[in-house]
Length: 86
Ligand SMILES: [Zn+2]
Ligand SMILES: [Zn+2]
Ligand SMILES: [Zn+2]
Image (cartoon, rainbow, N blue to C red; front, side, top):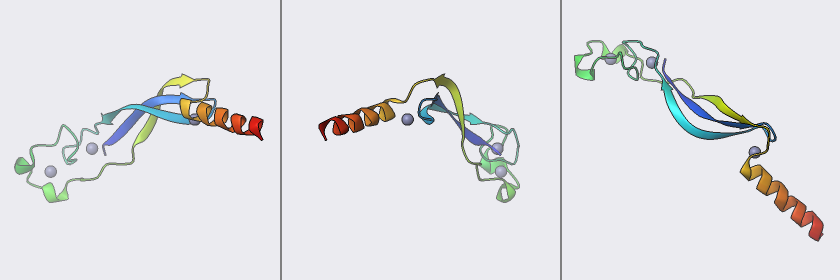
């Protein structure tokens, strides 16, 4: 079955995943409506039997960063600011 691949950056400092884009994994099955191999719906004689579901998206880190992501870094800065004031 086909699924979306979410490509992004993995931040090792906070273990967050920042999505950068998505691509589609094509299973190449003629009975899968998401595949490029599937014929046009009208030309598909057994379309009621075709797969109409995608499996869960998969995250794929195409980049890694040893630091924290911007969100986590900002949150930690904010916490430190509150601690200093208290
Ligand atoms: Zn498929
Ligand atoms: Zn983070
Ligand atoms: Zn079909």
